[in-house]
Image 1 (tube, rainbow, N blue to C red):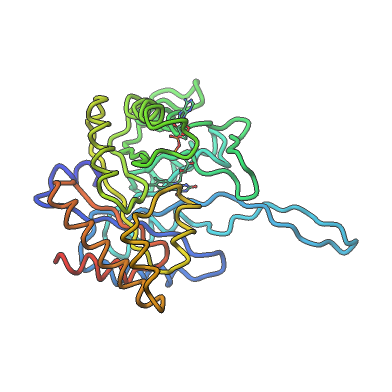
Image 2 (spheres, rainbow, N blue to C red; image 1 turned 90 degrees about the vertical axis):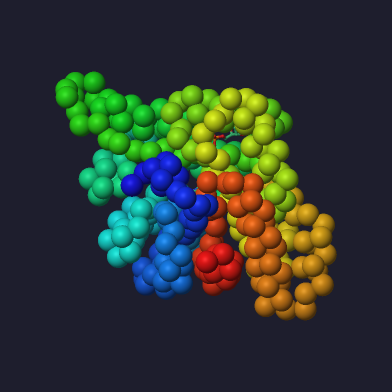
Length: 317
Ligand code: FAD
């Protein structure tokens, strides 16, 4: 079932979870162990992130360094299919521009369609870790809106090969990313909203936000979207802080602010077990307020840890 159908049919705020494929060489059991804790809450859908290649340097026998491209977390499509099969829950694979030619994207979408997966979250993807700027493949997409255009074309039965006649249309429900604290490359929030609107005009069905720790940022973002005639559902993304290190790591990685009261509480903690509890309580407060605001769904970023998300969602059931 499509994410938008879940939202339309919902009688109360829904929950969804986002997981990462395990590192290459790790069994899929690690995903099941994580999801086993969360499935009792009947999530409407589970997102599986996509991770592009990174460059690693290997020392050759002649002493020179050889640069190799390695995908450390492969398996997004397989994991989606496995989760659907094991738990009978809808999955949302993330698909990205980075590292994909248009043809590779088309083939990936064909695989998803054949597997009965009818949701995708369409993203540009971040730059390769060792690079400052995002660069598209020669025959790939530069922005999420362009990738979205390709998914939409396939939804209308239009494939890359113009000679294909009467091609079967796919039927993907399309989500996109939104940034309450603006995307780090955007010169200002208005520019970012302008391009977010382009994604909506290109056919996006709903938005999932970057994580935030101050609900006011989300409320302001939703107001700004509505003022700009972006009317599709905007699903807030929540991540509970769980270590003291994340106070600097999350702002650095995701370009967001952590409010002072939360920083103060985390700094008072003597152990990461205490931090984890502070993070859980903060996220419970955020969730309560978001439910009262009437959000359609709350999307929890598990980032490989689900026991704290279990505690948060458990307090609402
Ligand atoms: P875009 O919408 O393309 O925007 C990128 C930047 O370009 C923005 O600053 C925008 O304002 C600007 N822009 C857009 N269109 C134009 C245009 N036509 N001309 C000029 N400027 C333009 N990354 C992954 O690699 N894998 C994942 O699985 C993943 N999952 C994510 C899930 C969520 C919910 C979120 C919020 C992010 C996720 N990301 C993921 C990170 C995401 O890929 C990065 O934030 C990336 O830098 C931007 O992606 P986007 O889809 O928002 O890009």
